[in-house]
Amino acid sequence: MSRAQSAAKWTRGKASPSLAAMTREQDLYAPIKALLERQGYTVKGEVGAADVVARRGDEPPVIVELKLRFSLGLFHQAVARLAVSDLVYVAVPRPGGRSARRALRDNLALCRRLGLGLIVVRADGRAEVQCDPGPYAPRKSKKRRERLLREFDRLRGDPNAGGATRHGIVTGYRQDALRVAAHLAEHGPSRGRDVAAATGVAGATRLMADNHYGWFRRVSVGVYALTEDGSRGLEHWAYSWDAD
Image 1 (tube, rainbow, N blue to C red):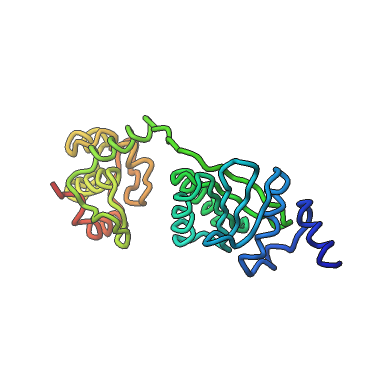
Image 2 (cartoon, rainbow, N blue to C red):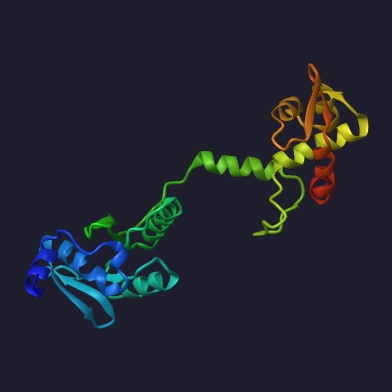
């Protein structure tokens, strides 16, 4: 196939090299150019500091920044281009795999937050617009806010250093489990209602029955005892449950 034929093929937006062959940023250029040309734009690459610039009549220019993967540098470049035009896109090969799809979703949200558009190039070489540039006003979730505040009120003291995960995150649920375990360690097998009254953990019976941490075992109806794992849990998490 001649270069002219290849260029025509790109312009029509048909097949292109697979993502495995996309080892350079310029490999993304032809699919992006084809996408924009189908919408009536005149497209040129490497104009000034921009990777791709497209014009259509007297409309503001469209700017596209190309990268083989998402990076902080890509977003820095794109945000800088907003000083030139409000129509700025970032373009990357469409990632594959579960974790990659999650990353795509997260970066899509970031693009929207920043007022940027996002284009991905599929394995078959087709370019797809995931979102267009524009102001973004996220809807507040009353349910999520209430859940966050409930967890804040339930958590006793401040047992978690912000950002620390090596030792494990202490939740209000875990603190309740530790209080229940401490009661059983001191008093032996106990009825759920007695544990609830003594510890202030209203859902003590359900907590022991669910036994998410393997700390409790059922002795008889409504009566639970501490397991060896529960005893170790009290030692491992000793710093976290009695903080006031």
